[in-house]
Image (cartoon, rainbow, N blue to C red; front, side, top):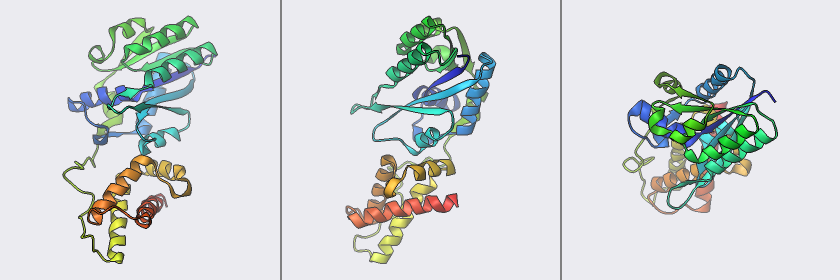
Length: 275
């Protein structure tokens, strides 16, 4: 079928992209990704390199405990398919390469695409490129400048064409986060004595929840609300809420009621922004 699929290795995008904009590899928490801009760029590159309609964008990332609000926001976007590998106990990313290779081969075998745009630097993807090409698919390798320093030479040789994403293009979708905070040196809220009165403790928990909510943009909040079945929140957010709530109430473990209160306050803060 005469369509193009786009395959995005998010780990490569953030690692190589941060080196371009900051001259060093930055943690995800210090980076802001403009979803509209990055997806628009891939649609534009699809037209530039193939002239064919877009099938969809496959976004590959990892998680340790479940999707983050940022990943959820992308998952709810039209024509975007989120694929998640995992982070092992040693902090190593696992499973992403096999997901990319499997999708490349299956889409090629089923003739769902004629061309593929592939953003990655990992040599392990080369076998997927080779097999997709055997089914007649042309593979266009995307790299973030300077690609010669962050992409496998063997992968470059295998591709049908190569296109570098230059500095101005990276800056259009990736920047330093305006709310990056060192969590070790700055607690979410001022700690209160463990003997705090119930009314004040409740207000403090709500303040901690509002602090976490304020660090999400509107689209991320919307994705969290869509995923919050029965008052639950994504595990990454839940961890932040419980840590912030514990700090806010003097360091003692939160009771079941306090945990429910801080989660409800967080979701309420997100709803207020959406309305």
